[in-house]
Image (cartoon, rainbow, N blue to C red; front, side, top):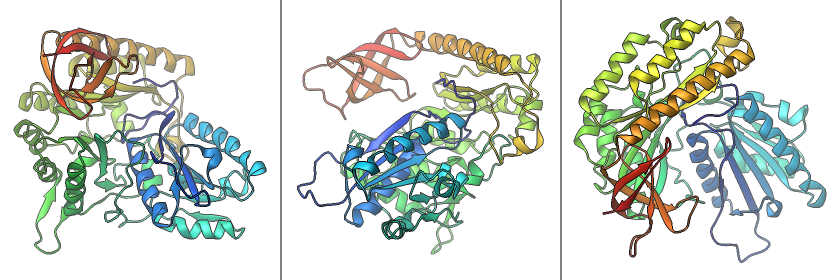
Length: 475
């Protein structure tokens, strides 16, 4: 996936500054006097998952969610600070929301998540766009801040925590397809990559109680969900110790525990830091059919010197060995990646190393961006952003072109193969076709067949492909 925005996230990865989703109820409230809230989520899957936690907290306070922000008494945006363009998009959106106050006095507007943590009171006092600013570790305080804002005070809580995991809060699954769901297993990040603002906006790593994760997976299975994605800034560094038995639970152990909940419920995870994913994780993928053959393994750069500047803690040769090991244990594993074009002082030769890494690793897909510095990061403090904008754009275009070629070649090798597909719903282009993904996370489109519905598993034989989609028929 490509975005023309200049910066990149190294975490939950699959980032996109455009609207990720809205949280809403499928049924309208029968009580017109009931307070209503509206949430938009931008950025990563973790933000969308957090919005479901916020929705649960608000539901306990008697709020009802709505699809229309014009009808809401409380409007919230869950934000991303990874890229400047994402922040500017949120500011424009907030300006639109503020217009409603003229027609509906008393409407409260709040900013949640990473942008709230980074900009803090600036949003309240200087720009005067919001009534509430709430960081990602302070969602429990939202009801108190609402009451303060209703009394005319500004509500702000951006304190980071070393303990908060929201483990006992059952997320309100709103606006979903009822088939796939996220489960947050840990929060924060300790990696301190030089380009990344996340450690400053989400705090230090802490892992959630393993039993609460399994219980959430069981609840989703009981309600008919067919796929869960375990989320964390760096899931492979998950570690939790049972206080009653002193048993240590690693990420590989957790994967197996969740996989055993229901063999017919798929398990995915995102995202892995190359330094932490180990053989035990790959053995779990190999040994359990419902753990998907898919690893997102951000490389960021294919050059060792640049990787050192990025503080990625590995070099080119080490990363190549990790890729080799993944393919050795799970030969049909799909590997995807993140990469940054034009990081500080990157030369043409070092850019070529990134291109050659794409060819070597045979990524089935990548999230590709060109670099721009984020305030407060090590790179912003220590390095000069000295690669010209036009050079960054050209290098990114070369990366995109090569990745599209590699993706297409990978998909072509699937022609004639038959995959188990989880039906997710109608394809974007035609209501006469279903869409779904295979274990390798590739999107597959196929004509509908009588009796087949979303949530079913079907066998689809691939007949044609593009760089982004497989197309076939049910067999």
